[in-house]
Every structure is written in C-alpha cells, then in structure tokens.
Length: 163
Image 1: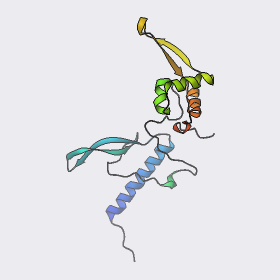
Image 2 (image 1 turned 90 degrees about the horizontal axis):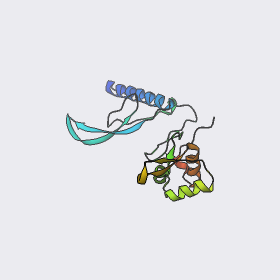
Image 3 (image 1 turned 90 degrees about the vertical axis):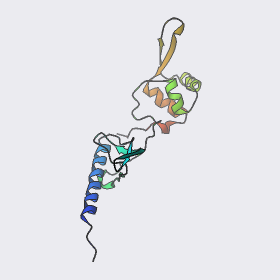
Image 4 (image 1 turned 135 degrees about the horizontal axis):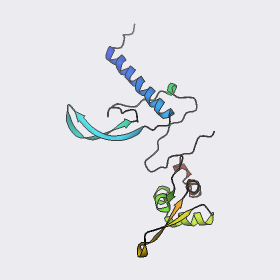
C-alpha cells in the first residue's frame, strides 16, 4: 500500500502545474520567457545576484525551475532558445551594415560587396553638415534576410512558420 503524498507535496505539484500552464499560454500567445538577473537573498540577506525566469505575466522565484508539460502544447509545437545576439522573426526594422556585421560575423565590406553584387535593395542617407557629413546606408528586412542566406548565417534568423 503506497503512502499518500503530504499536503506540502501536493501544493508544490499544483503550483508547478499552474506555472506550466501560464508558461504554455504565454508561449502560445507569442510572448517570450526571458532570463533576467535578480538579487539573491537568503533569510533577508543579500548574497549577490542570480537569474530567474520572467514573462509579461510575472516571474518565478530564483531557485524555481520552469517545467514544461508537453500536454499543454499542440502537436508540432517547437520550443527553442534565442540567444541575445540573434535576430527575432520577423525582421521588421531597417538595419545598417554596422548593425549586421557583428551579428553575421563578417566584415562590413563583405556585406557591402554582397549587396552590390546581388543588387539587393538599400537606401542611402546623408547625415550631418559640412566636414562631419557622412553617408549611412539602411538595409530593408528583405535584404537582411537575403544577406543572412548569402553569408551562410541564415540560422541566426528564426524563420516564420509555414502558413
């Protein structure tokens, strides 16, 4: 005969299930769950900093793990980690060569050459006056995606789901 779990164990399991449902709803709604830095406290004393999970709804305690239950997601759902240096889909903002070079890990000149060679869309603007005047080239999202493919860094842009 198996022993019944204690009330504290049942409460902890219910809490974990509630957190799982909140996380699943947030992910399915298109929100992100991010890792944020927070103060590490023990018995009211500060012991440096640590990390915790956070959403727009709220956050978990620093030592509280995020358990994801596959039953909370539809079949075919994919979860992934987007590192801070990656671009999120859809790429909506116009970017400069200087913005893209560190992300794609290539030289600015390489991006300029590829844009010219493949006749990709771009828009040049002049900023400043007199001797401080300089030319800035903005690249539309379509060009950014194409440059990612041409440089072999298409994995840095998370693709959309086929519709």
